[in-house]
Image 1 (tube, helix red, strand yellow):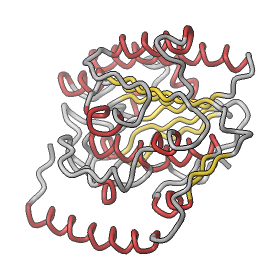
Image 2 (tube, one colour):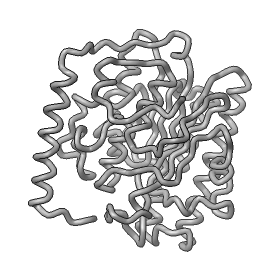
Image 3 (tube, helix red, strand yellow):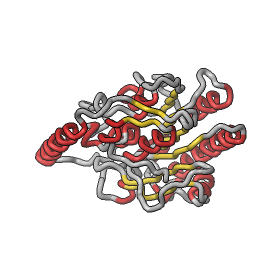
Length: 311
């Protein structure tokens, strides 16, 4: 992990507090009500999170499905997705799920010491607080996502340690058989690529990293095939593939290293147009999901840092 001196860390926290106070003042008095578009609220969402994707490992010989998907016209793709200034998993998954940067949600490490999720909840909060029932699901390998961010909000978020294969199989059961629940908005997290990176090296030249990415690529292709059948049956699904950071050597703490501070981001839908003049950041996922579903909050629009990638 990258060392941060006490002085720099203190200055960072002080500046964040000033910005945060100003920001909240600007949003004070805005409505807390959450509105939705009845014509789009029944759409479906699948977010596939893969921990530790180094962008240059997306190659036809290693991850053929992800490589081909990046070339499709109906896919938003960047291999320069901007991660948070602290390149650990905690800050970055928090930003992806909330739509604000770490200066607001205040997750600066993997220990989630003083999070500000009451003020900046995940996008699931807005889905669970409208009058239309939406079945929300989260299945993760890295449990802090549940224990610190999602478990009290999402309808189905099992708190047990499971492998990537079990994450994949659990999602398949939900998509194919509504077992044990039906899923309208689903978040997945695969962690074994990050484990391979820490154990052997984050590089396309490392066999263990390559083979793990190839396995996950197969999981993602199978899930896409299931969604395509659902689309043929008139279900309107959008799919995202996101990562929290890249890596170099056996770590990802150097926030100045482009192999670490950039990763991949995909958004795929057969009929939507995505903006092509914007390089996504961690805060863009949540606003894009809420935009797709037609869910809007005046206060959230004021607080959020990200933008929707949908034109």
